[in-house]
Length: 86
Image 1 (cartoon, rainbow, N blue to C red):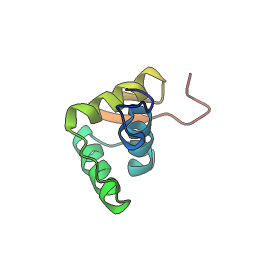
Image 2: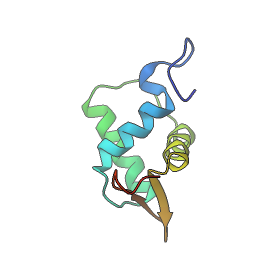
Image 3: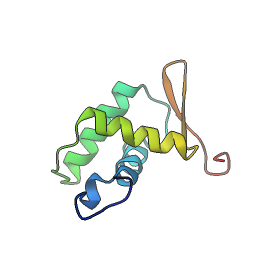
Image 4: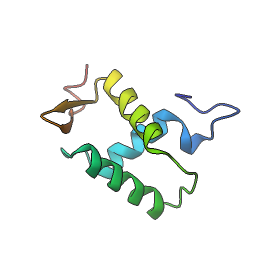
């Protein structure tokens, strides 16, 4: 689920989803709704057609949080710089 497996396509793996969120938001602070919209737009532009439900997107955010890449401050997702990530 976190990494691609026989049952999880690479473009749906949670690490991939998290990376796509980072690319879609360009690491800028956004609300969860903005991140979701930009993520969907980014996937459409890059022809990633496998459907990703919102709950799967949230699991991708959970992975980023567990890795220390993102945190929620006053309902805004704040992405840490590489040197700040723990």
